[in-house]
Structures are given as structure tokens and as C-alpha cells.
Image 1 (spheres, rainbow, N blue to C red):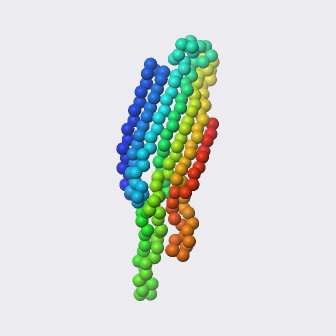
Image 2: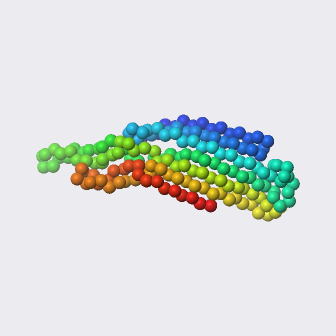
Length: 171
């Protein structure tokens, strides 16, 4: 199989306290028959509050940064090399030739896509006594790649397809 990707990224910082980043990625995979290409991007920003006048020289808060980001992630894990193409084998059964089904494929199989939102903070407190970070995230995944049961009378019992959604979140 082959994977072709194009990637671009932009980073910007201002006054050593405001930071912005953006990226975009375009991936093409030979594993998909009709939907080979996916576009995935992200944006993020952060603000170092301890660089502001209202927290400058604060003895209890040595460092404090707020951050947030949102992005899309594409996945092709679990997709076979011949997705979208039904495969067969030629068998010789007692001198008789037969055509057997190896796998029935979904020609519309496409990228599994996750949308990830994250917000958090990094901090150093009490004269550098305590370092830490707190992050909260939500990850919504669409077009999950699953094996769905089909009628075995057509020669196969499973078809790999996009089916389902999933949400993960945590602190």
C-alpha cells in the first residue's frame, strides 16, 4: 500500500506571551477505493499570564499559562490493502474449477476521523515549590472502522465499513 501526504504548519509568537499555531495535512491512501484523500488540520493558542503586568513579580504565582487547541486526526488502521475491491480465489475441486470469495469489501470505506478539543493550564507556584498542569479534552471520533456482520450466503460473513461514533473525554 502507499500513503502520500502534504503538510504545512504556521507558528507565531508575540511579545513572548501570546502564541498561535496552525497546521494542515492532506493524506491520500491506496487502502481506500473511492475516498482516498482526507484533510486534517488543527489550531491552537496559548497565553502566558505571568508576562502580564497584573501578575508580574507575584511571589505565589511564578508561571501561569492558559492554552487551548482544536484539531482533526485521520486514521486508516485496520484497513486491508485491498479495501474496496472484492477478492476471489480460483480453486480446483476434483478437477472442477470454482471461484471462491476471499473477502467482500465496502467501496465507500473512508478515513476514521477524530475531532479533538483541549483546554488547559501549566503553572509553577509558591516560589517554584509546585509545578503542574491541568488539561481537559473531548475527543469525538466519527466513521469508526468496524467489521459488520453480513449474510454468509454471499460467501463472507463480515464486511469492513465505517459504522459508529465514539466520545472520549477526560481531565
